[in-house]
Length: 376
Image (cartoon, rainbow, N blue to C red; front, side, top):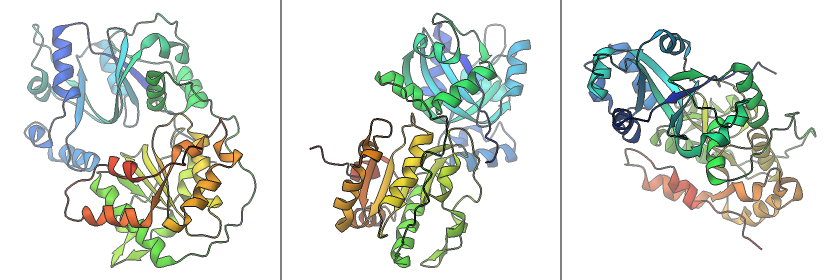
């Protein structure tokens, strides 16, 4: 199994004064545009941000230089996580996408301190989650005392982060669970939850399967996501479109982006690291195989919040729901009957056709269109 990367986690203090709250409003509560930063950054940096954000608006934050802040900022790299703390609560979490040291841009965003110092140690953020979590709920998970209060820009101890990742996985998913008062789920010590070799007995109608993959690829692009399909599918074509021209070619595996996504039919990601949604397209003789792939993903990232979908013909909906109620899938560990949504071919076609001339796509549309197992 390939080595998994550890994503370091930083606490950032962003409250306690009118200036900090004002700065939080300027670039966290509301997004900024790429056009605003063109005059401050070199062309290569702008090109990088264009690729990261797919031309959409972004979120940014920064710190004032100082011996500790500067060294910690230097150690930051894309995919690391920042947790923004204010007045006893974690208000925001996200992943670092890029960073830049630029006084003029910092002054444009946030003005400057009375001393003339600027928040020039800047970083751009993706996959953000606005939260409202008392820090005393999070502290014990990182081996801090419950009354620990972060100061400035600080990096959480790497061994504590590693221990957290091994037990809980996705830090942003954990924050949302804590906010909702839900019980955290521990990752199993052995990731290979299902050992049986399953014969899929697939009887595919390639044109229909390919059509659904292509529609999900197209909608993923509209939603400003990076799209993954299995390597063996990347050479496929649909209506003259070769899949490999529209999807990412490599995965960056981390503890919360496991290798089990490699064989899922379509995965939407924002930035190279976080999963936004996963789709299994099923018209095989055994619906079980597609659910099993999603169950592996769920088992490896039990605290994540992203939606999972089975895409199939309307005629197969009852079969999908029957499989999802099996004790293997609906038990208290996975609860796939609550997590996986059914999306019919017809609804996917309708949504895609309605979006043909759109400039973007709200992922909530698919979530609303998906159906969950009826409650008995």
